[in-house]
Length: 130
Image 1 (cartoon, rainbow, N blue to C red):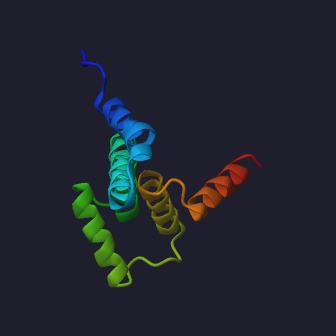
Image 2: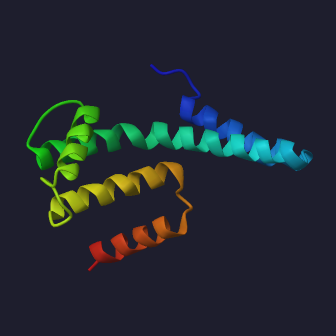
Image 3: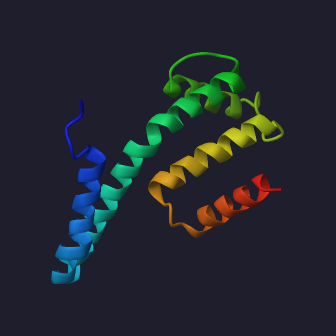
C-alpha cells in the first residue's frame, strides 16, 4: 500500500502553494524565482506521470525500427549512428513517426502550453476523428 499523498500530489500541492499563496506576496526577482520553481515542480510532476509509459513505448518503437535490442539509451545511440551514417533517413515513415511521437512526448512533459505543440495535438485529434 502506498502512503498518501503520492509524490505527484505533493509536487502539485507545492506548485499550487507557490502560485496561489507565495507569489502574490512576492516581488521582483523573488517572484520570478518562485515562478521558475513552480514551473520546475510541474515539469517533475509531468515527468513522473508521463515518462514511465512513454519510455516503454519509445523503447518498443526503437526495437522495431532498429531490429535490435538493448537499453533505451543504447538504442538511442544506435539510432543516432544510423542517422549519421545514412542507414536511416527521413524517407522511412517509421522513423518519422518515431521522431514525431518522441518529440510530442517531450513537449508534453516540458512545454505542454507551447502553441505549436497544442496545434499538433489538435491536428492529431482531427486526423484520428476522420
